[in-house]
Image: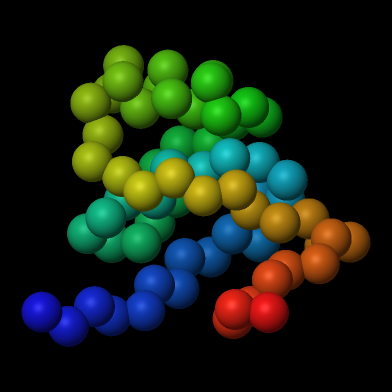
Length: 65
């Protein structure tokens, strides 16, 4: 099974937790905290992946070090 890289657009959600639709890579929900996002996901019964969108001023780790 080959995994394709994901490229969701997170620029509108700096510093927030986001739920990304597994089929479309679109953000379908966002919240200030992971707990709040989890509640939204449960209430809407979403099939998503969770990420935190980085702020512009914070470093982003790429690779293994």
